[in-house]
Length: 187
Ligand SMILES: Cc1cc2nc3c(=O)[nH]c(=O)nc-3n(C[C@H](O)[C@H](O)[C@H](O)COP(=O)(O)O)c2cc1C
Image 1: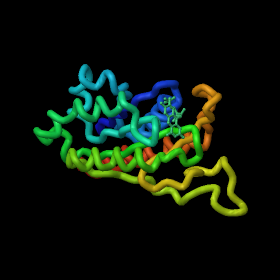
Image 2: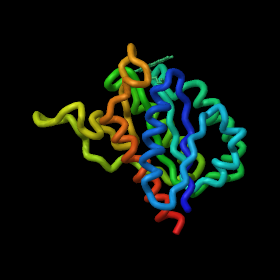
Image 3: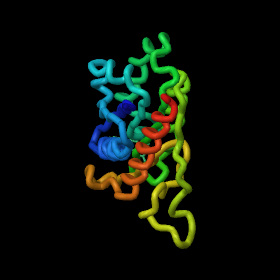
């Protein structure tokens, strides 16, 4: 059994949809047990996080940064950091913003540095960039061309239904990849 936790914050539901897609992808891997943990419940679910083989972090991009609520979770984890509680767990990340860029890379960088501070093993996205040539389309996986983690984009005037199928599939791909990596890592 491989335990995968997905810690996320979502102010308006977009990041939650992506988190659920990551979870669905991870759950495809035989033996994977997947836990969705809203960031504000991390303290109550600390046992789930401490017992996980992999933790995937998800935050919306707010003002070119992880959201304040996600940062609360990051800072809450400092006691665990001090005790090296998450060291050697597999990690990955995703973010959602309204603009095509929206400075999402800054958030993935924050999440990967956070994982490195914890001594975790960061897993990036292995998909080639989509939608970057004359035959490409917005329906391509990895349509925003990210390697550090999943970038998703949702229109500012739409609710959670605005998260595209391509982005959900990209998120599911990352979830599956992390669950497979965690299974190999914990052998
Ligand atoms: C306070 C705030 C700041 C935001 N900053 C950005 C930003 O820097 N770049 C961007 O493209 N979108 C920005 N947005 C839009 C959100 O990233 C976008 O709506 C995202 O899908 C929200 O995810 P959520 O529904 O999970 O909260 C911002 C939204 C809010 C509320």
